[in-house]
Amino acid sequence: MGSSSFQKEAAESTEHAEARCARSLEVFARKGLSLDRRFGRERFLAYRYKKRVHSHDAYVEFPDGDFVFSTGTFIYGGRMGPEALRRFFADHEANKPIERECSGNFALVVCRKGELSLLADYCGYYPVYRSESAPMVSSSLLALAAVESNRRIDTQAMYEYLLHGFFVGEETLIEGIRRLDSRKLWQLSPVIAGASRMPAFDPLPVARGLDEVVETVSAELRHYFAMLSSLFPGISARRCPVATIRAT
Image (cartoon, rainbow, N blue to C red; front, side, top):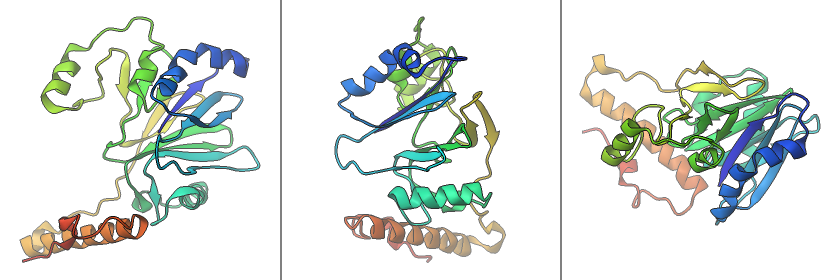
């Protein structure tokens, strides 16, 4: 599964834009991922690719041209798939709080009134990357690297990845390709820009003692895994012992 979006140049045709980005899109094909949906609009192109296995519909397109799709695992209000996307879009359009209802490791792409935006899970478990040399965003680092004219290794990021297994900051293995800060809501068209988000986490009641802190965290975990078990029947307390935590 994956996604990419590309801004069109002024008065650029869809055919010309696709030819310009062809090498990037070929990366998904080489991974064995098939195109699920292409969204072509006046200012941008956006692509969603299926998982190799267990693929399911994870996009909704509206009659006025608006759309929303997800990659990764997006849960909203305890629901997945098109129902979760419709609920999210309705709440987003009504300017209702959305952060508390979002769960999972995901990237969510939203087109609203011709403008494209992106929301990822707040902790950044599902990484999304942007190119500094071209108005492109993708869940695939290799897809962006394919269109970079001067690929150079970022030495610091390379050592970070070797030591930790992940990139510590926004820099990646390739200079000029950066991770999007998941703590921001990103506008992808007409320009790429990020705006701060408020996390959905409640502050821990540290002033009330350790027992209450443990019980608060335990209650949140029990609620979370109960929701997961309803969505994924294979998940149980036996396979996720943390779901049975109790304060002592």
